[in-house]
Length: 310
Image (cartoon, rainbow, N blue to C red; front, side, top):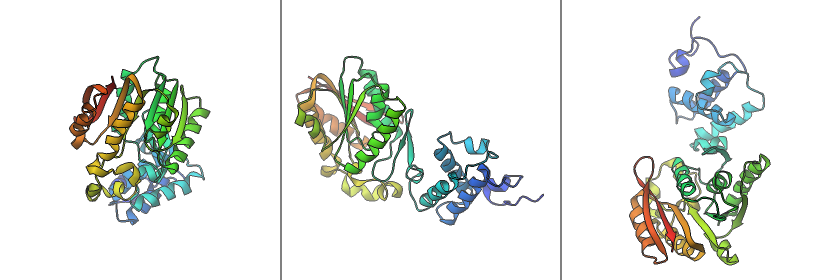
């Protein structure tokens, strides 16, 4: 039998026609939608289609290829088509499917929040490694989807985790993620979400904080043109950009964290690799901190600044 897809990349090597209603048929349909948008060639469209299906089912990337003949339930088809159409318009995969993985969590995400990055997973590791029992309160500043706060609340040994954000839209997303994890009994700590700029909600209540952790906006406004289009055109500017050549928010955070932290408390920040030394100097220049250190990400870039309150 002649291969119906000959000459179209991965599909061209398939020796049988996909069973109607199967995972393979869904992948083929999504690949056509993606290729029609002119952003993806045939081979790339097949790969993207499999990734969309895997993300929607919350399974590993190879799942679609390994389960080609599995029937697809009827309600999945319109979701997958909508995701492929959005991806074809240039949306990041996470926004197209409406979810992203972060450590052992699967979080709902959309254009109201920054997409969680693998680098930020390491920031959580750095905090958990340094903070054991007896540290009651951790604050995630600029929580967005809630990724850091939820990871600390589910993996750490805190009594309470607070996530703050200046964006009410972001807090809606974070609360939806928190509600789902609470329903599954996945949170070990009490989680509170608070609206306000940086640590303002905490300082207003005079709470003593053991850990302040943050992935603040750190891209300078004039660097927007250098960002990938799927970042620049889709992710929320409030979560990306900061004044004073990317240092304004970090500068304010360093000052406010020193006001909030208890003696021995930890400040842990993700920073722009190009400005890590500058942020470290900001922290070291505040006499209320000690043991300032710069830590590398998995690619060897200076990505994190940690310090302790005197």
